[in-house]
Amino acid sequence: MFITLAILLVSAIFFMSGKVRSDLVALCALAFLLIFQILTPEEALSGFSNNVVIMMIGLFVVGGAIFQTGLAKMISSRILTLAGNSEMKLFILIILVTAFIGAFVSNTGTVALMLPIVVSMAASGGINASRLLMPLAFASSMGGMLTLIGTPPNLVINNALVGAGYPSLTFFSFTPIGIVCLVVGIVTLIPLSRLFLTKKKGEEEGGSSKGKSLKELVQEYQLTENLYRLKAIPASRLIRKTIAELDIQRRFGLHILEVRRISDGKPLLKTVNQQLAGPKTMLQDGDILYVSGEPEKMKSFAEEYLLEILNSHTEKEEAKPTDSKLDFYDIGIAELVLLPSSSLINQKVKNSGFRDKYGINILGIQRKDEYIRNDLKDIRLHDGDVLLIQGSWKNIARISAEQSEWVVLGQPLAEAAKVTLDYKAPVAAAIMGMMVISMMFDFIPVEPVTAVIIAALLMVITGCIRNVEAAYKTINWESIVLIAGMMPISVALEKTGASSLISDSLVSGLGIYGSVALLAGIYFTTSLMTMFISNTATAVLLAPIAMQSAVQLGVSPYPFLFAVTVAASMFFASPFSTPPQRIGDECRVLYVYGLYKGRVAVAGHYGDRHDLCASFTV
Image (cartoon, rainbow, N blue to C red):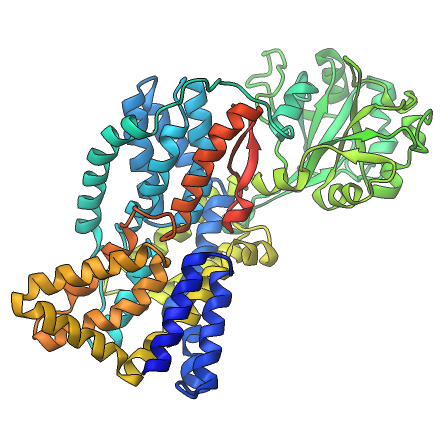
């Protein structure tokens, strides 16, 4: 027993120091329990097959799909527009929307999703964004208390109850408590945020981004100016012809930016395939051509080849440029600067080899203050030219790695990760809805872990996540290994009698004052540990102690286990308990620092908190 307590104490010290990764600490503790033969190999590895761990893996994938399809961002953006110019409305709506998303998506993913939205809205409304970042982190944790899947401690105590033979909690068992936490949180945060999170004297607004976003590049190079969509119908005369055979640029002065193919056969498996408009691209029936050029020339091209102009609502209406934005699902854009030592200096664009070697098109050239977009093939490249390139994200990654003759500006792959598969948002919403419904109602014969696994698989199969590799990247493996490694420690505490010793001490010390006093003792013990250890690890350790304390006192264990999860998830006095609190605190500091240095750091990626910082224009 003393060896187990010593291992737990040393682990807690390393958790508090933060100098060693928490998952590594958990695995080392597990190894020592094996070395001292406190646990058998089967017991030590039982955490990796636990329902809670499997559910968390599936929920990370589901949350990642909701993030990548832009579903949560779409909902939150529409709701947040209701705030108008009212700072109070904006503050309350941000907390409510964040809490709602946090009820179904991991709190880390919720914060990563909401941060860019919050900062941009604060900037447009003239509100100090630093006042919103910390409440944003708190709201994500408060939202986690609304549902069974909202936060890992909820799953941990449910697993403890089921393991002890008690009925499982329902999907909305936590909702009443979550609503109380949310209301109290809003009432508390409104005055405290005004008092402690106000802008310091001397801070100045403004800033610049480290790299240009895709939207900024489109606007800067005016790619959507005179942009039209033409659809190939069965009677079109360009079907089975290549773009080179059409010679559209020489004959009509037009430039094809993209060829898009949409499969509408099966709604769930609907795909949008973007083709780079290269000379060998063969056109097919149903292809949509994104064409840039003068409207008269575009109409002449459409009439000659019998193409349908998608931008006109009637035959008599004059063709207008498309209001559809350029999407970057498969192909993207980036800027690169030619170095003085480049062999491409004084070479014509058509002889540069970008298309033949890398599958890259050049859409525009920025030369000092001049932007060149037309008749590029005969333009000679100069030292310092900034080229706007277009290609598949894979080819852009390949050209970014070769920096001997050019330097790629910004982080194009990071921008690619932000591209949402918005045409898949309805599918993601349907899958998430079915998952929630199956977990809500007991008459549906599907276990929660089964529902989550099926939902995660459907997200991948239906293309709500780009591929299996992208699905793996949505999983926070540090959290998974931490929980799987800490669960057997609770087994060791029970096996060696340490859990009974602690619970006996609590019962003998506080039980004489009644069950309420014992409940308060467990609550404050959990809060104290959460100051230094993550909320998940604290819940894993305290759940069996709370269970045994309730059993010894002869009362229901449900209130005691609820006290554990509420104390673990709702403790905001320390930044160690949950990743969003660390993110909120770091980004608030980075915001102030960024105003001084000329840029703002905010979240821009779903995953580990160290990957959450990206430049953002204010």
